[in-house]
Image (cartoon, rainbow, N blue to C red; front, side, top):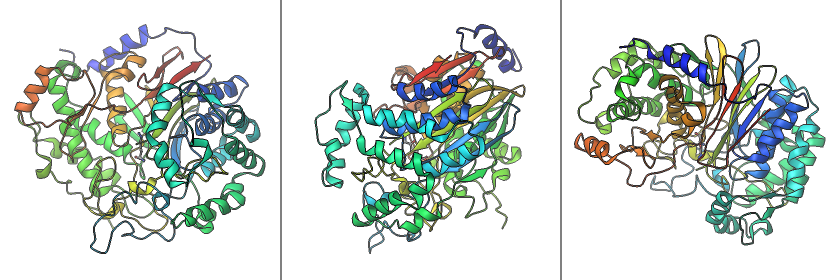
Length: 552
Ligand code: DON
């Protein structure tokens, strides 16, 4: 038996993985036009940060249900010299928000209020984030980075059938909440050209006048008046106060890997780290990929981690987050010691551990440039088209990120996540996220850039992609495409994709009292790049969507 199968598998993967000629740069994103906007910048000599800005803005045009100006995100980066860090441009609760703002007089949650319409909106961070990144790392004038998005908005792009389905699902709600809006008041078909002149004007104004146009100028005025007219509470002062935050990345060790990822206000890094540590001493190859025992191992580790998430994770600017303790080896060993391959644990009997405290849309893209810089970005409006509010003369949607707060202790958000006091609403607080943009080093060398949308399934999608590649030796594309499963403590169910569970495995697990979500669902949409030992770039663009990798 191989003691450490990882090392040998990696060796094989590294040897067989030079199957293309891309060495100079690569962008993998949710849409072809956005990957192209980024790669064009790289070809013109721009770095990964320049390409990031062009890709992000292009996504706001060609993928408007998640790409955004009205949302927020996280960027994890690693420079060619190995230095790394993150930028947090997550949305914030408005100054006038209140802990019980979504509850009625009887303390009951008013359904939908945190999900659709003006009260669901958090103060957006994307534009502030992009300008902050440009100030620190940009090498090409910002106007040149805005231009591809402006052109796409002016000239239009062809709708894919996936996009037509999404628009048709949400169109009525968008029209209702915005008192009708020409942009969406039509029937959409595949290959229709989607032109958004208002968005082109908005982008041009920001490109000419800078981030202040969005946070202190005309756009801030228009946004706050529209939001307040629609019953919301975001004022001009909220926009003026918004600031992104550079934060240290969270580094996790797993066997030979150094995983550079997002710490709070994302739960992603800590939950990923807890799960990896709990399973690290198991021989996964011996269990078998997606076998009954493998599913049990991951599910039980996920159950425990998501339970800790509910109690200990929130905005680090408001609470002390016990990161070291949550990732402490003895704590995790103790927490996982009762694991066995017998009956399912019962989530109702699982509580967050005792840690002593001192004192439905997102998008991910991955970029590597010829200098060896890597950028991993997950950005979101939260649900598809966010709050569905789109001030018509601005042409972009505003997020519904307030639903990521715990709006009432124990009440599940739209992804089924529950939380407590630590993630309750407070003015200017950031809501807890699961976004997990990640960069991996193998033997201190850049090895992988990855991330995913999917609410809490982001974390388990990133986890399974890492294990597929480094433990089981699948290539990058296959590691992304293989079907996935997921457990988030409560609800106490295994979520799974088609064809992952044979009848045999399902019936064996059912006998062990594991419960399943009745309908199989799509789990995550990973966009990843593997960098092999000769610096060839191998893409993994998730086949679940229209995702596209472009390299050169
Ligand atoms: O920050 C979070 O965790 C959520 N707002 C992400 C939502 C998401 O991934 C939706 N994508 N399908």
